[in-house]
Image 1 (spheres, one colour):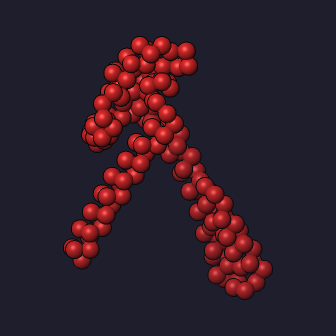
Image 2 (cartoon, helix red, strand yellow):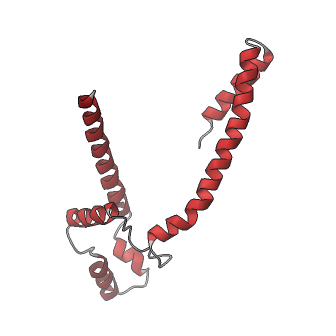
Image 3 (cartoon, one colour):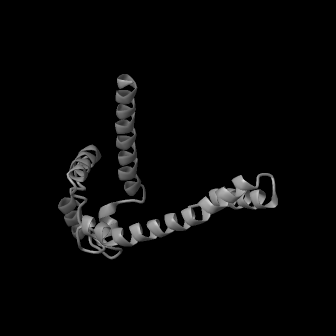
Length: 143
């Protein structure tokens, strides 16, 4: 059991590392981040300044290692759009997200438990079929 647990932990770390690297690289697919931050009418000096300021002039692997190291310490950087720390932006929106999630869970449980009980009491009846249909539709809907 210990061997299985260690194997799963190692695989989870590998998946987390892979997902973080892919996420980091996806930002680079859209083009030069420095040019995007500087804007359309920016001069080459302004773009160079932004590259240097954010470390975008360094090799991509060093950029990733620096980003991942800071992310592991809870430093997600500063949003160039909102001009405030990303952690603060996430924190501001977390309460609304958690409230919405809790309401959705409560609604689902208040609907699912009675439907399941009714379907179990009257199996192979129209009540069971309606409960099953609603359940399948609910599972098939995209999140």
